[in-house]
Structure formats: structure tokens, C-alpha cells
Amino acid sequence: MLLGQDPIQWEKDTLEKMTRLFCRAKHRRQNPCPQCRELITYARQRLDACRYGAQKPPCERCHIHCYKPIMRDRVKQVMRYAGPRMVIYYPLDALRHLVKKNAKV
Ligand SMILES: [Zn+2]
Figure 1: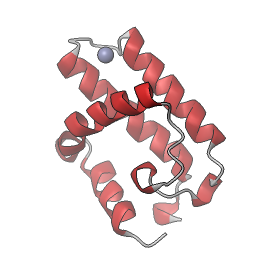
Figure 2: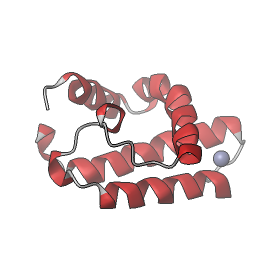
Figure 3: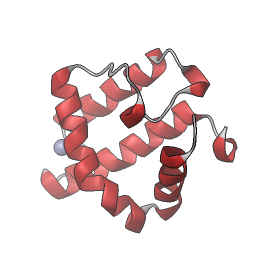
Figure 4: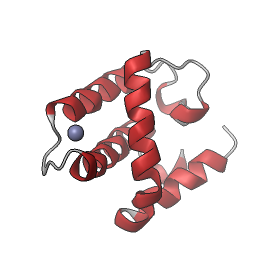
């Protein structure tokens, strides 16, 4: 396990941070709008149901693709927007994401 934190919890936190960045910029909301809150809740549920548990690979490399199509589209938009910005707002999380992405799982 990288950097000694539960990867599921970490993914939940990171996704929520990214969704908040996205919503603030795109939907002009200080707190996530209903649509973005729905995405955060949905992603948490998917992560809780993830059958890999603590061994889970990063979602973008997982071959199960457990998100339903509409949520997949939304999360992709969030990633596209917030991914590069995470380096500015949350450098440690962004770095960790890179390490994880390139690590052998
Ligand atoms: Zn929003």
C-alpha cells in the first residue's frame, strides 16, 4: 500500500476535492451543486462496492468499469478539468496520484 493510507478512503477524498474544484469553476457554486453532490455520493458507493478492496487499481486502469455511462461521463469531465489543477491546489495528492498511476499493481 502506498504511503500508508487506505486507498479507497483516499480515492473518495480525492474525488470529492476534484468534484468541488470542478463545481466551483463550472457551476459557480461554493458548495457542490445537487448534480455534483450526486456524483460524489455515487462514486463513494461504487468505491465501497469495489471488489478489489484495498488492492484496487486506480479507477482509470480498472477493467471492470463499474460506473454507469452517465456517471462515467460526468466523472470524466471532472477529471479533465480538475486533474491538472490538483497540482496547484493539492500537490501532494496529485503527486500521489501520479505515483499510483505509474506503479505496478
Ligand atoms: Zn456542480
